[in-house]
Image (cartoon, rainbow, N blue to C red; front, side):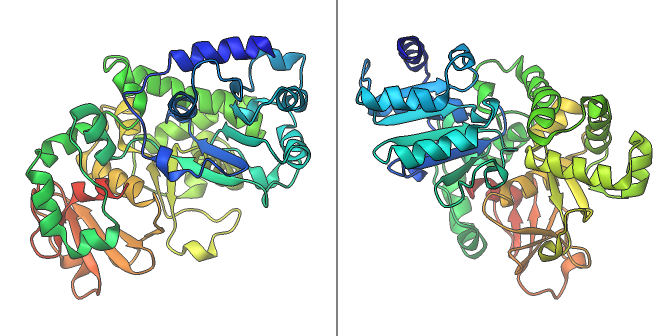
Length: 399
């Protein structure tokens, strides 16, 4: 166990503190079992190490941060570690990359039952299915999901501009005052255009020149490693999944013809749907349905978007249309806490079964949503609202 503490000290000591996400305050760290899920690259590991650095002194052995892919676990179990840790006065055990440890759910359940005095934090891939694990953890854990940086966070961390977040209802009701607050301290349209291309993933801080390369590596890791390990995808089909991503990325917002898409990558229609759902869970796609309440296991989505606009510019820079980037941004921002459905008959999206939103450029009008109650246009290249026509960048302040 000493080797883990030595590694813990090095990792915590080298942890940068420039970007501390708001999620740090949103998590109730006193919970006995916490699970933090999110796609690779959004900052889960950094958040955990920052928590230790902020709350424990150097050398404090009541807390231990380690990764489940450590060489240590090739000859020791997590259960064995927890036992030794508690015997020696350990109070908080933080295990990163939990999905890389076989039968992790059984051992975490046993630790929870055997050591009620121990607080445990685990983190893992967005694909992690706690409710479908080997042991039922549904009544024991508190789950938190991490996404990449919002526009509001991008401004705070990269531009030094401090602004609050606003709930959707307040944005819709009080847009003039909110826009005045934002415009008083920055040029939101300019920063919004930069955000579409850079900054969703916190590693943008490390090197802008390598940002897209690292983003491609994230995508490859999810497809080549996480899909086979966590979802059981046949490695022989990984090239087909990458072809699927390429097709979607070059044509989004993609209105799905499942059979045509299946023919393009030479798999069955049902297999295409399964792959799309896996990529949605992995935070590479956002699938939009016209009637969310009627979604079944093999229900085809009505529209497919990349999870965030940075993915568009990283994977298909020559094919990005600003209209696609705008809609991708809107969906990515709204799906942090809101239900988003395909508008189908009216508007681009229906939000929380109440609001109808149309997304476009500054010239976008109300023809497609004329006479529809609670309908709004979110338009690019606007600093201030014009009635129910609101600046698109406002959606970046939802979180």
